Length: 205
Length: 205
Image 1: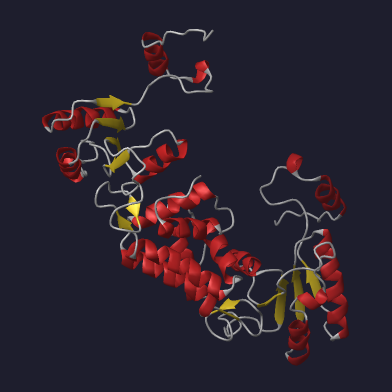
Image 2 (image 1 turned 60 degrees about the horizontal axis):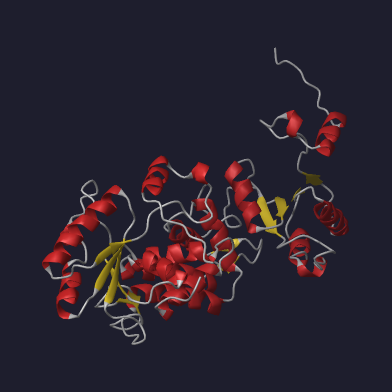
């Protein structure tokens, strides 16, 4: 696509195209949409995006996104402050919060140990996790980490650190066939392990 | 999706989700991408979008986007200033410019006459078109307008206006089967008309 009449338009297309998953055609479509918007609407848009860089913070306790130094989950006195769920990313906090099935606190690692990607324990928020476990009274740590090879490595590493820090009740997410999923589409490993880890079933009469 | 820990993040998600074709999940993905960017990158992004509202202009002659009062096409003395191609939108100017097959000027209508959508001639940039044709020496007007029902209506209306203004050489885009297209996928009307409007074929020996 050749450059257009306007450097201002080109710059905006470049800006949109720098976002992940937005190609140049979509970027042009978004920019052309914007030129017919009210300038105040565009300014609000621009300010919202800018603030992500200048005003958004990460919680000093759990590293989740926050508008204050400590996030609204860590400050919520109605939550269980003795249980921590360790997750890879902010996205995972949101996913678990959306389920409504967890009322404890989180700890965002900011990644998982991945030798191939050159990510080691020092690149993750592990030190602050150990500090929390030593300082606060933590009864249980849940590993809310994907059951991939890197995930299992991370779980193994964290468990050793946590045991050393005096935390011994550690759990992982239940694994098995997905609810509502068709058996024929479940992968072999999941299906095989689900048979071995089968659950006794009883009628509630 | 429930609201998140941060009003700043929520505002950015809302902002991205207000763009056409961007749903809330994609908006969240874009916002989360942004929070790991350098604040200066985000400020540049924000400024680029803002400028679309505050600094981008429309050419006073042809209504194409422009950084100046008159666009770079209208000021280009190497172009043919006696031929105007009328198009519906800025997007169409770009599409025709990309072909490299037109060296005249443009006139962006800003829509087409559409009784169903309540768009009449007064909503379009027709007055400025007639003014141009009266003031400048226009030899030919090309209707670069889609061959839809509304498009044909617009072409008919414009032709009458242009004839009244003294422009009599008016042409429409060639119609027929698309280059590289498979005949079996051409619609009936296009194929039927292409047979009736067939072109003599001769070997250049």
